[in-house]
Amino acid sequence: MGSSIAAAADAAAAAAAASTAATATPTTAAGVDLRGGDGGGAGALSSSLPGPPHTPVLVDEIVAHFTGRPLPTFLDGTVGAGGHAAALLSAASIGHYVAIDRDAAALSLARASLEPIAAAVGTRLTFLHGNFADAPALLAAASIPPVDGLLLDYGVSSMQLDTPGRGFSFLRDGPLDMRMDVTGAGPTAADVVNGWSEADLGAAIRELGEERHWRGIAASIVAARAAAVQAGRPGLTTTAELAAVVAGGRRLNERRVHPATLTFQALRMVVNAEAAAVAALPRVLGVVAPGGVAAVISFHSLEDRVVKRVFREAGARGKVPLGEVPLAAPASVLDAAAASAVTDVDEAEMGELRLEVLTKRPVVAGDVEVRRNPRSRSAKLRVARVLAPDEVVRGKVNKYRP
Image 1 (cartoon, rainbow, N blue to C red):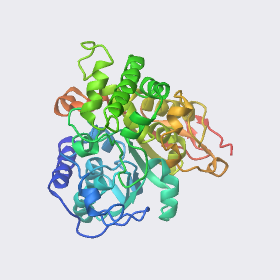
Image 2: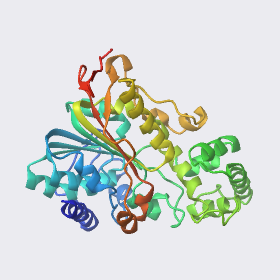
Image 3: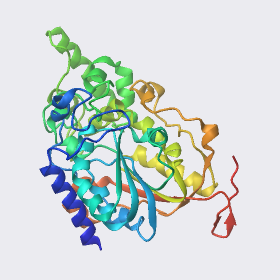
């Protein structure tokens, strides 16, 4: 079955790469025309259209957890170009596939590639433009009931990294943007780099990038932006400029990766308030019906620590509040970058979450997949099943306590 699943994902990627328009107008919860009619017009979206399609990771492992039983409603909280979705639509029995993504350009590609597959298997598709952390509100607004399966794939996609105009990559010169949602009004990486204090920049690079040389890098950024302003420029404005500054602020030859890797990671997480979104995992899991399965792919140790903690606490103690998980990063780092994008949810109404953890250890990519897709080497998959209030697990009854 593995080869056919991988083939479906590859076919979706090829369709996304070849497609430039959808056959009908998809509307979203935010009222965005995914062809580019709103939120800045066609030019705004076309300038951010992805480069080469994203190659999904751990496809066979994901599909294995969602086959064998009907799934009336499935939520893909980070659909991207639809690689995982294509494999799931082809292999699983899904009645209604709900796809969320904060990148409108990716949603457009996903729609174009997934519609033919969904039509062939008789699955209904719904596309919602927004943050997966807002899943409870997005589903409620669209009158979608609790879901039977959930997939979250954290982090940036290959399409975003490989599109210079998005500003995610230090390997391709472009504007310092890094916003996953270019239709929004959130801060850009240039706003953070040129506006944050040295202390806050250092905290972000240390906590979110886990960069050892955060002090030197933060000091180099502040010095370089001051020199740019003194020379009559608006500060640091391109990825090439920033990458060069970062390289000068840390010792080289310690790592085989580019010296700017961790700093760019931290800035991307700040710009998109990713830490706040990841911390909302418990309440996102609240949209899964009892008996439903949730799979989460993380690429960053901070992300995986949150997933591990939520799964462990909900599994070992039988419950975890459906709020947000507090993180170690300072409030100035987590909150200053539009953390308000994560909608507040009334925890009293959400109750408490109970899980059966289905993966004792995180599932990682094998050697063959890593050779085919090097970006999969840091992926970790954790899977859990949502328990009913009085469901017996391993001979014990975990009582529901509202």
